[in-house]
Length: 413
Image (cartoon, rainbow, N blue to C red; front, side, top):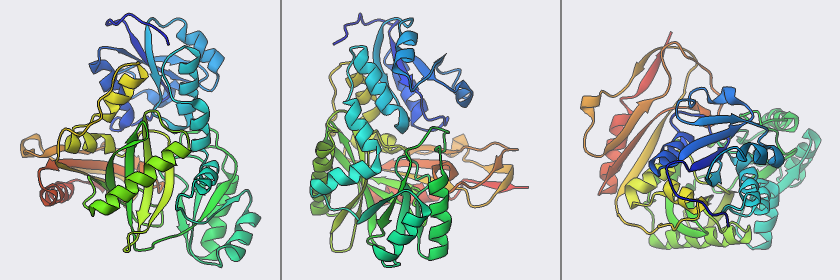
């Protein structure tokens, strides 16, 4: 592997990133700096990162061309590691790291796992419980599958690749199915403008009254189970609870299935985020695997509740350093999101004054500014604020999060 001299001139490369000032991307940049490295972002579209420009050195290149990125990296001193926080670019980052002799997950395994159809096929062979599914390419395919495979029952339509629940929708009638299938069949890029894999999936809508969970893994070993709060038809997260307040047997089953799924997909390096649904009888079904670290502030609440810093450990592993992912705390941490429920120009913002912070309130903020025009997109971009709390008792963390979340909001002209 690549050898380097550890000093303050070492650089850590990010290949693209999420672009929010509040999300995982900026947390990675901050953590890179806290480790004493210089953060360098490779991007083909610097205009997406104007809000991050003061936090990271930006190098413009074609981030889907390994040769062009290698050329840029040849002029960057002492590169210690390479990563990406954007799903589409994680395989490119891994391949770049491999070419430069750095530590990385297997690029091909990442590419396969990024394709939700390939993912389903592999998990089916591994006997992982999951919804019935059909791979589609056209509106005609969708109409035929809806009638002949799913008998006109509610189904979930989703893109072959992507995250943030962009393009995911529950449809319960023929008109909604036609409308959404037409949209998915005609898409050529995701919400970032990255090219997408053609086609889409139709999946059985299972456990209508079931609960949603995710398992966070590192090197295919489960760290914890998170309870997810979302609702149809778009399923974007409105909150996450760490750890999930469920029976130990359910936790054990979810962890076992998650580890089995990660291994089946060859995802035994670094962070993986796997989503499940569980019914009242305890039956578990895998919803999807994301070959990356969780978003939606899950790494933050995992660190607050359990003392496991998944961002730091990911960076250390990419830099060839030893990692420590053992639980050091036993608390409860919650993130609740404020969801955009109307559209218009923001006239005022309800935030929480600094002097209102108390022990256990970690973060509370609204993202928009006065004068911003907000429009609903029915995916994770509709989250316009969040609250994070931590407490020794589950009920206390829940109560505090609900209390402070109710104090956040926006008003429109």
